[in-house]
Image (cartoon, protein in one colour):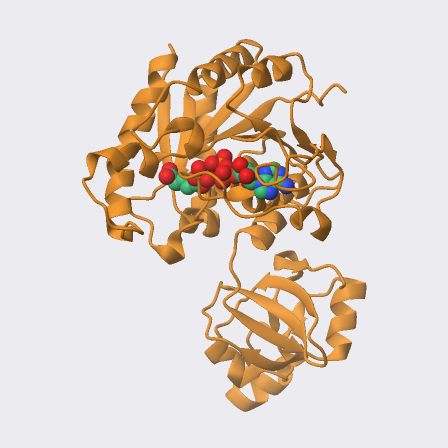
Length: 371
Ligand SMILES: Nc1ncnc2c1ncn2[C@@H]1O[C@H](COP(=O)(O)OP(=O)(O)O)[C@@H](O)[C@H]1O
Ligand SMILES: N[C@@H](CCC(=O)OP(=O)(O)O)C(=O)O
């Protein structure tokens, strides 16, 4: 089967390929990947590289036996290892490479999200290879994406890629963990990512990686929902890249959805973390679902959590447990406590002013599927 042609791709390379033995960067697997990148660029295709391995590449500088390694030391390892990653990749190319480090916060904030996009676009326009990673030296737990499979999927959506290649230490997705089951079979094509696909994925098997197959499936779901064909391939085999250059599939293709979400709705759904909940009445559930209406102050029955203006919240039915939508709230939880259940004119009567009664505008409301 020929794979769909692509114009712009994100290639994610895991720690197990960068620093396979945990003793710093090794060129063992990177050379074949670098050749692939060079060939793609010569064919006029654009590539953004997301490279893991900062912690693994920096580890050997630290004389530490403690297990698990304290987070603060891991961050220091990442700071020195990130240098080695950039040096390693740069050696293979006669075009410049640019380091793009980000945290989840950079992708959560719409303005910074657009800024990441503009910077990467400008690099690509000027023939520079962007090499992205999480800013591990600075990221704290709530700022972290945590795994680069998901970070790279977010980058793929930010830059509107049409292909996403996850280079792993395994040939693709199998019907069970191949490291534990000798009779596991490779799945060349996954058309739909559902619970049965998640059920195939176990934990991480490599000593230096953090993701495992589960985060790759999650990442693929993000990317495919955005219309990006996602491939999980074996980055340890040079033959993988020769096959890809013949436009054939060496691993698992997780097919892009045909009606991708808009960039903004994708960002809202997959990047923003909900900070609270709004419980709404049955009529409002119907209005939002059937008519695509905005959510009004009069629709709200109760508020949960402590969120600020501009935070994402889940919209739930007050009568059941169903989540109806996710949206960006124009009011803080505190403000909503005063105006919930009231129409604009009722609020005006009570408080002497008439605020915007649309608590979440329809453009900022992302429907969740009915369960
Ligand atoms: N169904 C499955 N198909 C393929 N690999 C699986 C599956 N279930 C679990 N795995 C494990 O996931 C591992 C890949 O994840 P990981 O080691 O974290 O890679 P990376 O460092 O590339 O992120 C494989 O080596 C494999 O042991
Ligand atoms: N940002 C981290 C990588 C985290 C990660 O997802 O690693 P991996 O599972 O090897 O892709 C680092 O550079 O060490």
